Amino acid sequence: MTANLSNLAAIDAAHHMHPFNKMTELNEKGARLIARGEGVYIFDGAGKKYLDAFAGLWCVNVGYGRTEITEAVSRQMQELPYYNTFFGTTTESATLLAQKVTEHAGQNINRVFFTNSGSEATDTWFRLARVYWKAQGKAEKVQVIARRNGYHGSTVAGASLGGMKLMHEQGNLPIEGIHHIGQPYWFAEGGDLSPEEFGLKMARELEAKIDELGEDKVAAFVAEPVQGAGGVIVPPSTYWPEIARICKARNILLIVDEVICGFGRLGQWFGHQHFGVEPDMAPIAKGLSSGYLPIGGVLISDRVADVLAQEEIHHGYTYSGHPVAASAALANLAILENEGLVDRVRDDIGPYFAKAWKSLEDHEVVGEAQVVGLMGGLQLSPDKATRRRYAKPDDAGVLVRNHCLENGLVMRATSDRMLASPPLVISHAQVDEMIEKLRGGLDHLREMRM
Ligand code: PLP
View 1: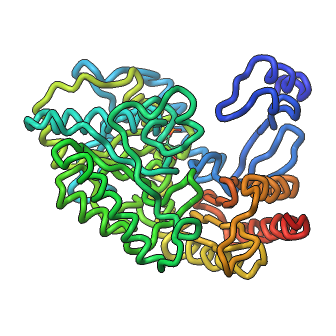
View 2: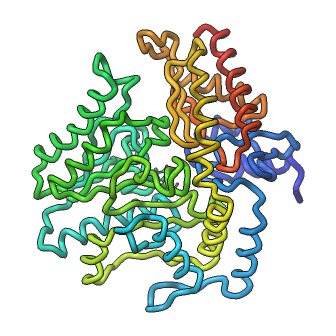
View 3: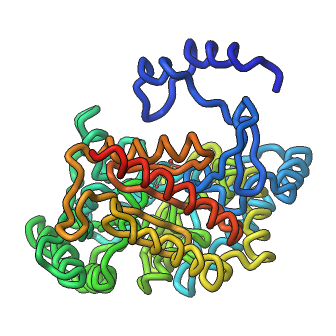
């Protein structure tokens, strides 16, 4: 590091506006400087070591410090640092990445449109869905249905499609043409229904919304396989098959947001494969490059691609298919393949993590431990028998999160749910370390008697 720590903190407070923060509050403590990473660990500026159970921001799937990626990036930088894909040109890495990424996506998906982020991927499919219907003489099919408490990014379309109240309140969102239905969050909203009954009920809200808007007006429905930022909410088993049935019966596009669940997180290459549904389009990002460089995209099924191919598409980004970002993604996917990391999540570390995560259900302040692959959501509750919530749910989560942080474990809290999404290379011993430290945080919450 070139500058000293207190200098950096002062510079940061003076000049750096952070996402999703209130700067006056952040500047009271100062931003924590992360200096380096290695495997599943990160180190702050003072050298303190943390187990990163959140893989950066759900993205560092292959772990930190992979020289295969940095070397590929360096080679590409020297050979061709940039060229566009607009005017009938391409680059080797963009083309090979398009092949590689669609190879893992299933038989009916053979095209990808590149973006720089998940939010841009959201804006892309949102526009393409409307182009798709218009091209078929159905220009009225423009309405899009999404879910409360879903997350699809922070651009205007992304924040509108997401179902986050606080985001909607800033800037008069959602924009016109976007509607929200309920989420399959059984613990909080399932009432007396069994999870399976509740899953069906929530899926059928989609049908009711289509009826309300008119089938000939609805372009698409979007959802994350497992709601990530909303709290790692794993839907009941009845939910996804019913959603897929409704989309098909009502002829609306099914958009599965794979930004978090893609690239092995759920023990399959993509989350929709885990739940056995076929999307018409699927935004991707994060694990595509393990966050080493920004890159995203939209996977496009043949059904949609064949129609779009007949249209001139007035959409694209300067950095769509950026050759250096694409080379990072190619090297990252090679690691996932060569080390069998996706299978490892399904057959080895995933089941190990699931058992450890589920074991937390014996703790007094845990209402429910949900897990798929290497993605865990832990519901905090002062009384699991009645599924009671804490009076101040946000405070409960923050208390556990901060305790973990002090003890060298990075986890995220969404309200009263603790979220884990560690790098796919995490070892059994590191899972044990994570669970032990998290237990410490849960003990602390119990002792605080909130
Ligand atoms: N979609 C989902 C499911 C996400 O979780 C995110 C980000 O967390 C996005 C889209 C937006 O991605 P980005 O932050 O890269 O724009």
